[in-house]
Length: 512
Image (cartoon, rainbow, N blue to C red):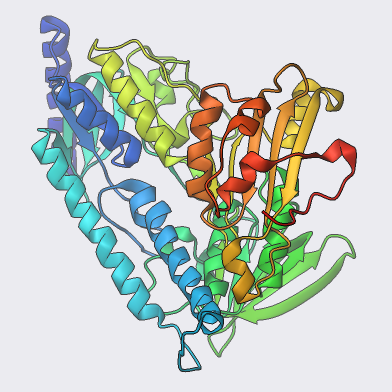
């Protein structure tokens, strides 16, 4: 106890010393301090260093309730985009193997999937990225500290390492880029004790086996999709709708396709408790909200994907004057990413109202760094940002959903051009293409500016990325008609859209 008190006394003395020196000289240890080593924080720190700023990054990964932890790079690299896309690819290869016989390949059956082999390869790639990020920071002369950071005042950060040792540093500008972590329901007995989240799934050494995914967010559907795709018995339990915030017609096509390919869905159902049986299996009891009846089943794994919470609660932000959105805990930011404290900024998922997307955080971080360096005044443009949901049938979109377009402009002022199409590669394989669909949501005025573009089908991300440029440049329906397609591709069908929903005509594409 005496040693602890002595340590605290020394810490306070160091803090007072640094505060005194800072106030006296107006100098800081660093020009920019970034708390959070995810995609946005790393991009911001490296960009600032390129402009000659003295930069430090503090990054510390709190283990998940199951004890899962990882290295530098944040959610995207470790437990998000990268491992998700690689496991999605594993599932796509399984589908390709099934198609291969129709294309003349003689593949011995039955074909089986080995989780351990896949997981080890994915995890090794992620570790290589962790190391690569550390090397890049060193090459850019960015100081990296594996410390848990919190604010003591608007210019002073306290960092604590895993042994509890404290370090104090000061910075002229502070950038918060701590991202979000999965929520676990506190009102469901056994949820945290027996369940896992996406923070754990990608680092499992052994197959999750029969899995219940609770939630219908893009994280839930992507995980359920690749688990089904590699041959696991997978169910999704949803309280309400799928892909909230996305176009709901497209969401329906995505889940219909998943269901037809083997994922089971329980709609309007709420989990009540999770119990571990003597066999080791997990018994989940839930209530059907419609019939008010209770049901139960057993699973090997319960994966919670019921939302994410901002990692801001332990940063001491409110005590230094940073205003948070009360419910979400997100930092309220201005157009220039500044918080209510002028020299404290927030980028990425934790900015209130910001899209929770890695490329958004990266670009916002770079632009912020340039502004802090006085090299630019350009602000991040959050309009018409594309994204893709990597479900078995991929869904890419950019711009407004049909519902949002109607809300903003009124149903009579929008025109929706749409088409059901069949990818050429589905024909020989005799695959069902009834959910392959495209729609362009346009204003009816003039050349009909495109408000939103939506696509379900193979390689949706690649298709949507190209058309996103067009929307940024003010693409109209007339521009689509003037564009020559690349034959035979799925993307070609976008520039051939000619049937409107208003007409009531059959939107199925026939022939070239």
